[in-house]
Image (tube, rainbow, N blue to C red; front, side, top):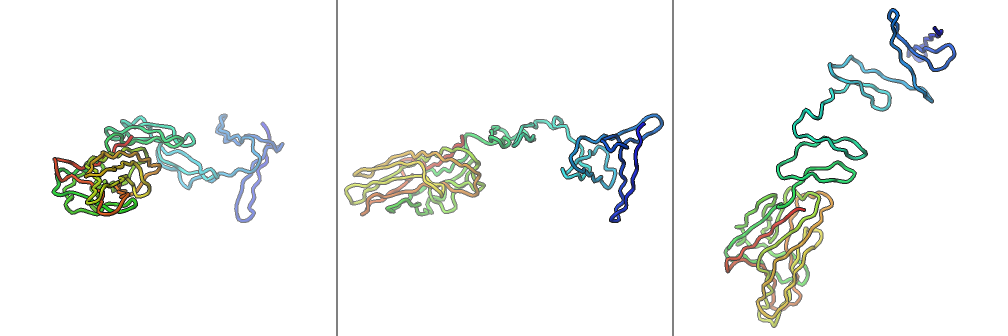
Length: 278
């Protein structure tokens, strides 16, 4: 058996017990009971390594963990991920494991690249509908893209899915809880009208906007009370949003008595905005 040197130091009021092998090379530190022993062997190190032990003996089932700086503590019992029905274990950012629940009915598991995947809805996302509202008609005479004015006759609009009717009653669709990341198709059904009034013709452009940028366009150009539609646009949402309203805007290319209108006040027409998530 090799010889050891036991040194006790009390410098700076901190007592240290240091055990060296006689040759000052890496060796074992052992606790001996009878003829048996339990030993700790140091790995190949380039400097001092200190460990701070927990202040108590922990609870049943806890394991010893480190903060990466030598401080050890007791942490909770590891849970078998297969003990929870429907849960999934997936690789997340930097290879870290992420536990997902089983999601909701109809949701899809969507890849997020280097980040952990997530459950998201697809298909129908929300709709606002107005059927045969009395004189439900929005008109505008702006020479640049602008929102339609509110129309109190259009208060009969009803919403479904994640949507709600815009508070200002403009022709639009509101998502008070925001939009998830993804691509959306927005379909507007209604009578888009270029009304020439007493002038010879009228040119109107209609588009959609999420309040930040415009998308989806339709243009009417004629010499009568011309109707057209529907209006279809595609919206990319690169990051989750807060409360957002998608609205229909108008742009009257010529002035005079002309106006741009959206209407559902006759001929059993409807006005409906539907949003589908891809």
